[in-house]
Image (tube, rainbow, N blue to C red; front, side, top):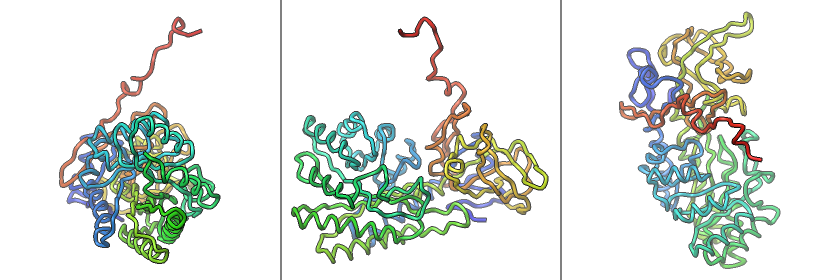
Length: 440
């Protein structure tokens, strides 16, 4: 059994998170319930930052908030002096409402609208990561109309294939993201932006994928991007002060996963950048990174209540829970695997194997194919680990199922930070049908 962060098992044989009894949390707030170990989030943030500090190199660690975006987590991220990566008007709006320092916000996305870009200018955010030529045109027109400067990074695809799932691989040449380094798109984007009066080109950005367990791809990306920046300096005299290497650092979902510590990724990045800079005579740039999953993923645990049970003789045993693909789409979307524990029987012998089924009307709504658990029964509390990234943020109302509540646990205390949706919430945007109201 692998426990994460502050998780322990108490005298009652219950799983605890952040010093709180998970069974009590389930009883207090109901299930399904997302519970976040905030101390683990803080520890991860500090580990990334400390490695840069010890190396004495300029940096920004930006929380890639698409993994989990709420006012409360933005406020914790700000307390930890993180920068913030947002990818939509909604995330930017949430950050502003959370009181996030706007100069530390970076705006990503492959199809930012004019309205979103204008919102970013009006808020005075710190940086826009530019993804395509259409966006360059919009930014030029907008900055000239508003007469306002904006820091930008050019997102590039370095032609690197990280060893991960096709749906979460983003650095290869055939990607919807960024300017390609190989075919000249990045050079053209540089020429269009580096000497613009209002757009200040800070450097290059790449993101080569997610759930990556080694440093080789990051090393190669570092070399390619820095060499390109050095070539531009040689050609034009322009020095880009920032190299953003994105995120994608892996976490441990199951015993099959063997992630590296945050410091290992960062140290290797720093070493590669220093070596490449020295070899090319380029000033060592600031290194920016964007961890999301590796900050928040294993800090999250989802609690469910087991309901119906079914045995197919000679085949499998099913245990159905009161959630499923509506609160965690990842197993159905790309076969993501998870580990679990009966929170109310945490010390019991693991002598049964169950398929954990969700309650949605889909045969593929299975959270875990083979969960090793004690003998389960209706009413048991199932904890599924490492659901902190892309659980709540990708949750839906499929089958008109209300989305779960979110609770933060820390130092023996717990706090509701997102209310559970109600049936009334599900219909609040609905309008009644009226034949008289039909427009011709």
